[in-house]
Image (cartoon, rainbow, N blue to C red; front, side, top):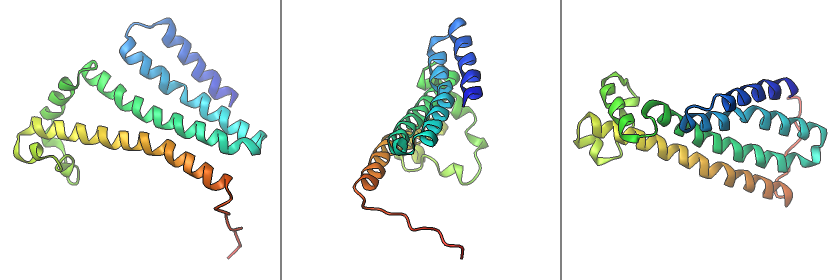
Length: 162
């Protein structure tokens, strides 16, 4: 926990000292905080087992946030924050997709009827929708897990050596 937090802290301070590209570096900083938050909450869960349920919610919510930030980071790096540039870059490489990835974005009518730009836009939209689905569901499911355990509705069965 300590070593991972120190390494991550060193990288965070390094980015803060050389803060030249805020659009991208803000996202890098949010991702770099993942290691200290995970390690600290895991360590506290081991030391204070009664607080594990609460700390698990913190970990799950931050994990969902980092998934959102990572996708945003990819768009920032590929297109300097401009979605249209990312779509243009994806459409230039649309022929490189192999099965089953060629099916991505086929739910959108524009992807079936239009050219590579429409397909690239549909794929990026679908990736963003899947990421947002995770971002919204992960904290909700963490809260549901907490409530089910807290109310005693679920009791794990002891493992037997079968």
